[in-house]
Image (cartoon, rainbow, N blue to C red; front, side, top):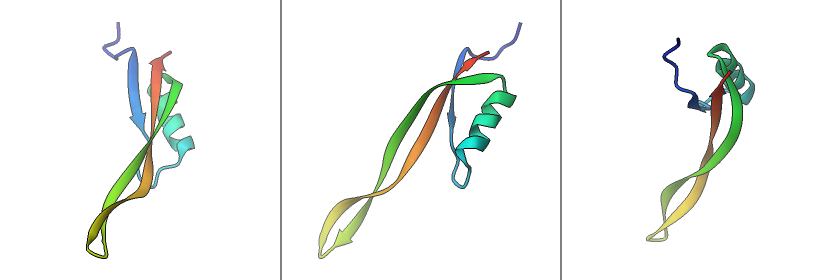
Length: 66
């Protein structure tokens, strides 16, 4: 029996392509089930006030054990 969890989350790293993340999932024995995108914000000081500005996005895949 394997000690791997049935579900696991894989985050696309900075500078990593989506294809390389999916191939990494496949090498570890997981199949993508769900894709989640979360926005990343950063605070900038503009004219004395602090504004929240979109900075990027984080992509996370949920994988199911094959």
